[in-house]
Image 1 (cartoon, rainbow, N blue to C red):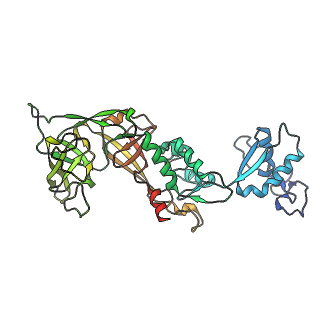
Image 2 (cartoon, rainbow, N blue to C red; image 1 turned 60 degrees about the vertical axis):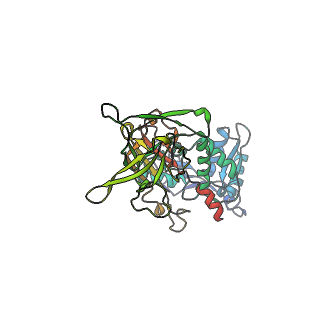
Length: 401
């Protein structure tokens, strides 16, 4: 067989154990088979290759593995694993095989074969694609290592297969980032807000004020940062409605809102293009409300984030949904790839962010106020991946259950 005298599949080498054994794995199992496949390391030097069961225990013993941890489908293989090792002169102590349940998550596939198919077929950008459930992917998405460890410690190791909610993992990520991530302001879908009564300098240029805004209310040691404010701001287009519904408390004609850390402003009007789309919102500010509170004690129901037009930076943001639309990919279709979500990523360019984000180290995570947690890309400056949103979906799942 080794010399190549026989055709592929015409001969095998088996271990002589017991063809009547109650464990089918011990019924004279195959050890070697003929296969003239090109090997990525040894080329065409070999005509025969060992089976996994035959090589598994030997590799562990040679490499000094003490405990071989396998998923539950290898439970019936353990007797063969031990039998092979009992027949061999080992360089050290005999390894032990222990089985445990796979870690399965909703909307997620952890099969290496299926993940490789996603990469090889170009369905994702690579093993470090932020949608991939790999350590490289989760690092790029901004998952803290401590949050992953805490999640794994909570669910523990079991011998019963189960599927955990991806929202539970995200809850641990959100809890850790709430403690550690600094806050910044960013506008993903900008529309201009013009404060019509904003003062101007002697040369006619708008006055620029600076506000000290807390970096992280969960950690006093993070201090504050200085944020520029002027009469022209970017706000989220969703934060303004011409004819709002009853429960809409953000900016609309005649309504007063708080601009985060700055002033109270009241909408005084808006401008539209020929198609009727709002292009600019007009407002008046109350100069007595610096810092966001009114001396007469009046209350507003909404606080909005903003970025100064003259000081904003352009950024790109990647927003992610579930990579697979089904909770258990492949369970109904037969193939997880059939459940692949066609729009699991949205790239938004032209986002406006505050200048302090230029100092955000690559790979670190910040909270975009009111929007969620975002990881600064490790390669492209001012590209941010949304790690998780601010709403704890796991809390709602627990209530439903």
